[in-house]
Length: 160
Ligand code: HEC
Image (cartoon, rainbow, N blue to C red; front, side, top):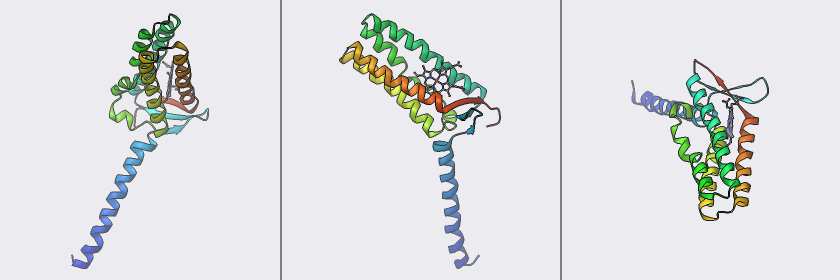
């Protein structure tokens, strides 16, 4: 290969590789693995085990909300903080990296903000400690549950 040919091919290869990396990063971070659902929502395509993990976490939310509202009705702010903390960002650590890459950015953002909302509830229950303040925060988190459910669905897919 002549020097001139080499000086043309190398930059082309580098640009192509950068393009491939950018496309992979876009797919992993932004797009995820989705398809349009029949009801107009976006269906997230997950392996059956991943779908089960997600739905288990969802049911844990409902169970946690029950414990939290029970504590709230008794002005037990320590109980509120404990229940909320279990649904906070630490709960999201169990999500495997391979599954994270299948979740679109909008989904990840909403999920993280719901978990962070529970952390704020736990923080404030320990410091501010008024049930009315907690109820306002809870309403904000529930808005996120509703927003995500109206935009996304989850489908078990074996080949993704
Ligand atoms: C980032 C998105 C997102 C957030 C936030 C979210 N969910 Fe979900 N949830 C889903 C998806 C997607 C499904 C599956 C729905 C479907 O396929 O129709 C689901 C399903 C569920 C289910 C059904 C579980 C089952 O076994 O079928 C429950 C209950 C639930 N969510 C509760 C909640 C509650 C309570 C909150 C808020 C504290 C919440 N979710 C927040 C995305 C979310």
